[in-house]
Amino acid sequence: IVGVKMFDEKDKYSLLCKMLDEKILRAHKDMESLYNELISLLQQWGVQTGSMGTLARGIMIVGILLIAWLVDFFCRRVIVTSIRKVTAKTHNKWDDYLFNDKVLNNLCHLVPPIVVYALLPFAFQGQPNFLAFAMKLCWVYITIVSVRLICSFLTALYTISSEHEKLRERSMK
Image (cartoon, rainbow, N blue to C red; front, side, top):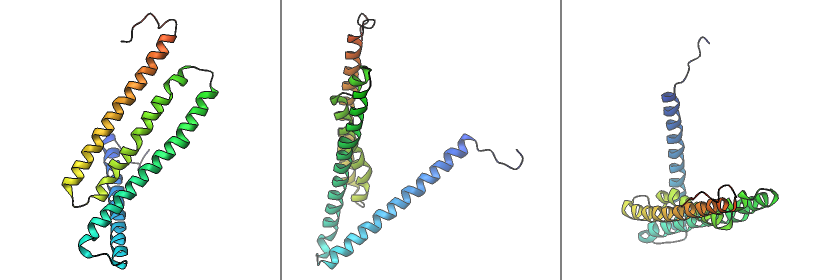
């Protein structure tokens, strides 16, 4: 086609990176304006200037924890319930094992710390030491829960293979 520029993979990647950078910058500006509005609200309430930053940071941390709790609640009440209903209606046994309570519980334990990890930089602006410590704690928790999720998934696979006649003779361990 004449006059139409074809994008190669490098152009697509750079365009995607540019769009993501713009969205991150916009989100950062939104959080900064939210922080400034919170500071002005605290000033209107008569909070002393010296403790205003700490109080605003504490409110933002509580907000982040509330968002993480809401995501966890949604995950457990809506997504897990829907998955259980779907797996109960199927005639296959393998989905009952792969999506058992342990796997789904570990999967739900993984979502809130990812949300907290993503939102922590907004609460700890200008506090690189606290931010690094909090993000490392989140990362340790995410790693532990990920290992537990993998173990529960492998246990489910082992249970499936031990019940299947053809796979019973082959060792997975």
